[in-house]
Image (cartoon, rainbow, N blue to C red; front, side, top):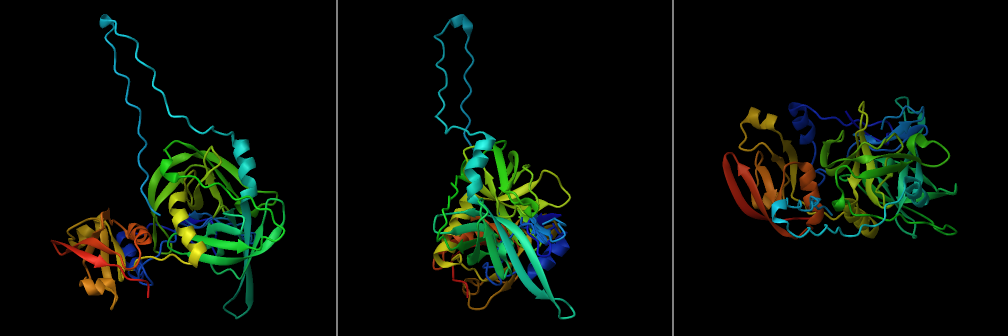
Length: 417
């Protein structure tokens, strides 16, 4: 099952059977709003010292206080062009020798120790504390540990939402051992991202360099840096490759996250919010989830999407998304076969919220949305990603099915109520 890196207690993500999926998602609201689902994610990667946050395996990377560790503007990554093969030469014609292919110069690749040396000052430990009441109304303290990435010299730090969710006290520990209390600037449940901030008085921060995930290629070397298990003495480093791109996973919070980077770099509880970097010491992903019981399968939120979300969180504390006004359910081949749907992918309308864009358009329960604008909508994750890029007030084309009939119309997105 999928598990996040940070668990306060551990949250588990798993793929449910079709029947279970539709039941769990019916409760999710989308436009994605209260009724429209917000991507959160794979199990978070934070490890709790007492409860070390585990990577969302697909569950958050957080680990328990007993170190019972178990726990991410959208744009698709273009496929890299391969140079055209050199044509074979008929030696009998004795033609002039072919010119060698000249490749565009690439930035010099660094050794792993050099990458770690450059990034370590930018990767911080995030310790959270909270107090809850047990069934006998007795206070129960809990502690979690995750990872964060320094964004700028003003004290902004990026981490996973599941690392800081519900925390009453947040402490950031820097590479030099200095610690500062932090406050939450903004969080986004749908993408499992958050921004916190510390007072920079007397601090000399080194922001991480953010790369471009659209340039990634499967097989490319990557390095994961994070505070696994909350171990003292600095971050833990592991190395691997980009195993796959564009992964989509369902989480234990009935959300779907899309366009994730899959890697075999070792990711452990406490790594949630940590950096996945390339050989140029650039952050290209935020470690967020692992598969519980699996080895060598971890997931990171791609940095291109993270930049869009984080910039809005820093500016206004939330992400301004367009709002459709429906409760969505993922259509799967199993559901399509069982209920004789016209399509095998898309968003089934489980509820239409009165007074919203969906209601004004005339959408009905059991309609299936398959496209918004020029973007195919195959699941709630793709719907969420579309709404991040399209703000309230924008009018977009919509394609949906009512029974066997395909309907094309226009929808003016609303704002979250």
